[in-house]
Image (cartoon, rainbow, N blue to C red; front, side, top):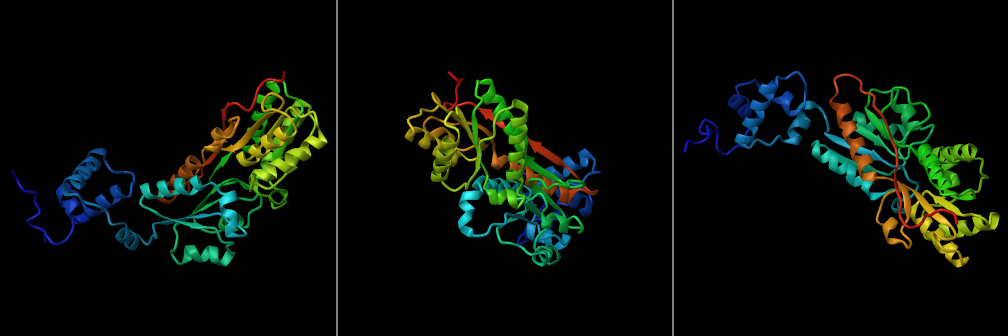
Length: 352
């Protein structure tokens, strides 16, 4: 068997990019362009380089690429919260794991930031080469982070939307559509008295996108179907908040035949409150949740009908978009609105 042509190299050092270039019969810059996913390389050349990489067992050293290219190879995911105790109640863990998976695939590190940044601290992260790009969560309609960064040469994208989207990249959940679809579904089942448990009032006042857009979609649905408004802005932290808010809704309108919530936990609270009032779900009142998919929808009794998204997929795609933006030779703007998926389970039925 013929030995690999490694005798010309020092056997004590690892395979280098120069070794790959020699084996493939190309220049080192050509190998570098292929490793970094650049365009304008002939497919035959690209294939030859990949074969050389596989034959030699070459593994690009991310830290070395970072130092050579002047890039940190680090992304940051920023979710500003007032207190660390809020984290488990307001942020789905798959947002973090989805971003981490995509970053790892593209050989980026990922930092998760939940502090209340200042303009100086935000810009310092870029200027001191701590990060290459920033993924913004909990986006407000008028968000100071976006107002600042759009005036700078620093790349960022949003999981969410502000009011002025000119030239900005984002991926967001279509909350307005979700509310209209929830009413479409329930009205088709014969429901006309529909209660709504939505995001906290504080979120709406601060202009946080999901709160503003869900309420806008709700009002659009009210106008379209000519039904009366009956909603509460409540916390997202517990079953008990959904329980208390549902009792309040029933006091306002005892004839409710359906309730829509924006959290699975609050929907579980609605089911509990209805049971206390001697009303069965879905026999006397249907309950559905608009929000993120998860195990809770299947394990509550009855199982929840949902309009749902996958936070993992949203965060994964947003991170890929961030790396695509960083690799682009020209400014890149992509705007993606993700519709929800209706999953009918046991908690809804036609009005009898």
